[in-house]
Length: 296
Image 1 (cartoon, rainbow, N blue to C red):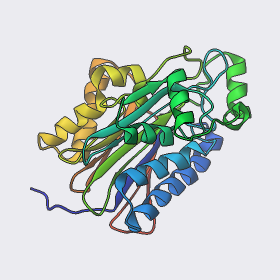
Image 2 (image 1 turned 90 degrees about the vertical axis):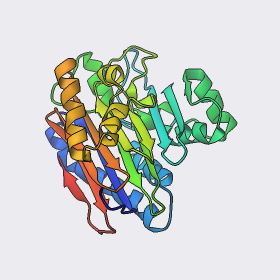
Image 3 (image 1 turned 30 degrees about the horizontal axis):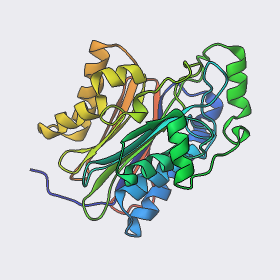
Image 4 (image 1 turned 90 degrees about the horizontal axis):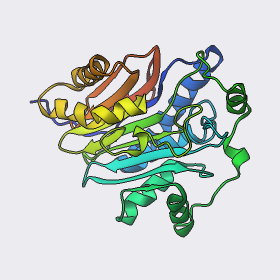
């Protein structure tokens, strides 16, 4: 059995898909900032939950990613956001779906988790909960960028740019795992559509006894295979994280044929990642290294 090696370890992804050439370097810088911000919390003694929330929040604030500011517009020209977070220590989880005018949906998902009631809140109900816990709404202009408005105005998918979802997994110094995922979903999606990023076991899962995972790609396909939970079951059966990630993506590819990606972290701090897409920008920092490792 592998020797137990507590963190800090953090892995971040910026979405699987095809990135427009002018965004490649911008997104690499964003991923680097996100993983660095998460590590700073871990090295200061913060929890894995705090680290994944901070990393994802960094990407939600970055208009180069499809989460929070810069998210895709739905068929009606509105932004509806999904996010989830899970604490591997006690299987606590929180998620929100199809929320509007919330700058950092991952913060709202964590508030849902910490409230200890429903795991998933959507739409108007999620908005009411946000107001009750003091998370203020933002203006629509805060979230909608000129780039996304222009894409929506063409009323067609842009094949040069089709990347969605951001996520993070982390292991803290006490040996606890966490995962978080956030997205604006699909360009021109049906109003009210909720994808895998809001569904525990599909886009996000964390369990100290198994590992932590965050997924990206075709949400409907990820939901059908419960991809995050499936990958962690492979870990539990003895596969190393890289093999588990590849097997999970391979199984989904064979059975459904959709484009997806996944990042994994096991309870020993070993990382895994896999994709069947053109790109999936990722970064990780482990063993207190100062510089992130970047992967495309």
